[in-house]
Length: 277
Image (tube, rainbow, N blue to C red; front, side, top):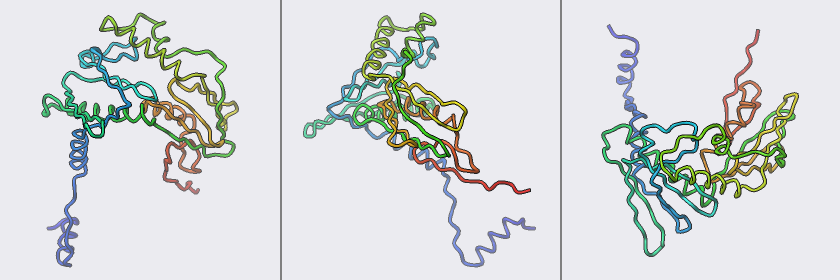
């Protein structure tokens, strides 16, 4: 006795139609990521790269994990600012320099490819370094679109004085530090970021509430509004840029019935038809 799926296969074979084997997308995705993490990252001559003997500590009130305590810090400095990337102890770097084009490239490897944690951090480190190089040279950009009746956005000067999050963290406690110079380096980096940002900004949003939504723009991000329904965010830090964009989106997440909300980078949703009684 054949079940329904087997009958369908037999009918397909009798009709002379060739069956196409199903491709495991998980395997192909793993192969693609394995190929990407071995590709070298091109570093222009305008970017300076330095290595610190301790891990980055952006949140000193929270202790670092045992794995992060063994890491070092990669510092990428370019025309648009400075980005740090953790470099774990099992990740190896190999530099190559082209004498003709005066460009450098760095390839990453790990000690043991059979260990899952090392494989994951291998690709992550390569991606973070590629984003850091692009950020300090060209910068990253995120566009938010406001869709809805009366939805408006504008950028204005922030009248409220505020401090860098690291300074706020240090006021709460002495923090967790794992090297004598680690605290001083983090404080100096925060001061440089505040100075480079210049005049603090805030977003003035009209999103259908009875009150306006006022959001301070984080240090290191520049916000502009090409038109009242578009917000353009630029920064050298891709991670910080994505976090702030998601914070804005949470005030009006796209809803599937009328298509209203805040959309990030051309985001599209599938509209639903309302249920009829």
